Length: 383
Image (cartoon, rainbow, N blue to C red):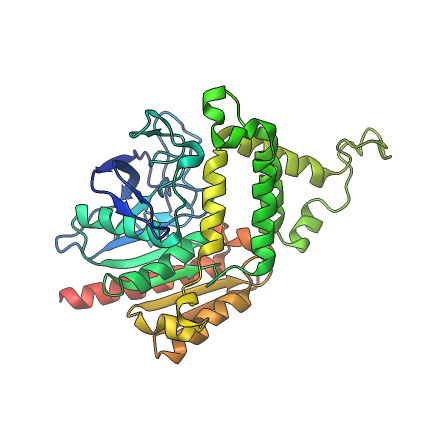
């Protein structure tokens, strides 16, 4: 299997204001996106891939000027891969409020001539889906063969099935949940507080001061990263190994880095603080917290999913304690109660939440087989 090769992003401007779930609206915004493969004559082979918290529109391939800039799901999308771009036209869209090109807090607010900063309106999963639907309209895509996402991307895929039930044939929800648990909301709030209390945050308007709340971002990323890994995975990779065990097999007896796991988390935090926007982190984690399609149905997920029309693929991973298999099974049970066609895969994998990004052959083969079914249906419809 080969990489899709060199790719380039596109952008589309929307002048008409987008009404947001909060009651606010945003106008004059731009969405950045990438496409892979070829759209067929009847525009029936399009697949939308929705991204998770710190990802973007750059799903697969590399940029010509950045040979190490491999897309975040490159092992999944490309010629001969589970989502085969020789068959499907794949679209990745950067969500509103992001820091990777689409209009977000770093961009200039036309009303003030200054960066939005903390004034950027809060957005929800449903708002992102509404914006994606506008982009699909502009591209002439009336119905997706599939909408697919992992983690926060899976929430978007689920929202597509609810908001636009006739605009997707298949909904693929991977390592996701119908709503966050109290524990998950708590982790997100701790991460946000790390940013909000960083002196360099400056109420969200740090751009004007030429500073970045790096310490807050570092801690936020460290907290988040802990939740993406399983205990078994951390034990195998790091255990209680000392960072400088070869030189000194004793503790340093200070508050610096003794253990390899500490070094790893600080490295991840440092790296994250160099490229991610603090206001974006606040927005996206709040969108995670707010997602709860059953809320308008007195908490009854079966009633909430009664309006769906798509066929579903749902996958979870045994050691994912952030979005555990129990949460995926809630989705499956609600769909089955509504007599929807559902394929469910629960993969016994040691890598925690991050497993949906990794090369587990059982997982990849399940996705490949499901896309074969989608392809066969498309071929049958065209016969």
